[in-house]
Amino acid sequence: MKNIIFLFFFIISPNILAENFQNKVISESFNEAKAKKSKLQFIVISTKAGMFSSDVDGYVKNFSYKSKFDNKNLILRDMQINFMANSMDTDGETRDEKLHNLCMEAEKYPNVEISVAGPLFLKDLKERTYDGIVKIRGKEKKFQIKLVVNKISNNSYQINGSSSWSLKEMEIPDPSIFIAKLSDEIKINISINESIK
Image 1: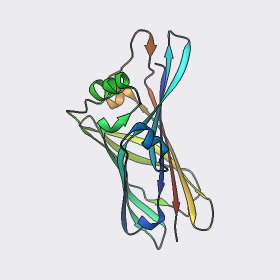
Image 2: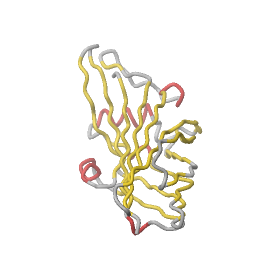
Image 3: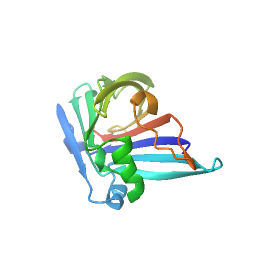
């Protein structure tokens, strides 16, 4: 395999916005997770036999998102994403077994927690860099993420984020085999759409 790209897409319903809010997404299958508006998606790009590239869609079937929200000043703080490692689904039994057992060691380290303290000002339309922490495989790892807010309408906002992680730095075992090579880079993109009354 050559590259890994994780794409995180979240659409938060306007009726959950409050001083503290949370949202849970529960799916029974890969296809159900894929069909939902709120989704946590990852795409793996691999290179096989040194020349052929392909990508594999994956979804986290069950996850939660929560944050403190200052409705008056339109500020998000203490943003968190939580999911079980064995909820990651690529619609391939062999791939998922390797992902859960080798890469994530899901039985030993069942939870993945991603947090960004913020504050994220929804009125600020400039791209800014934030520090984040991910608890993965039982260890806390620091990362940086770029976030930008786009105002879609008077009451609607889109938050986009991007980050780059390293398998080695995250201490995730390389699942590459001889005919399919994976690069060390993990690219992450986040998209959150929110409507505020």
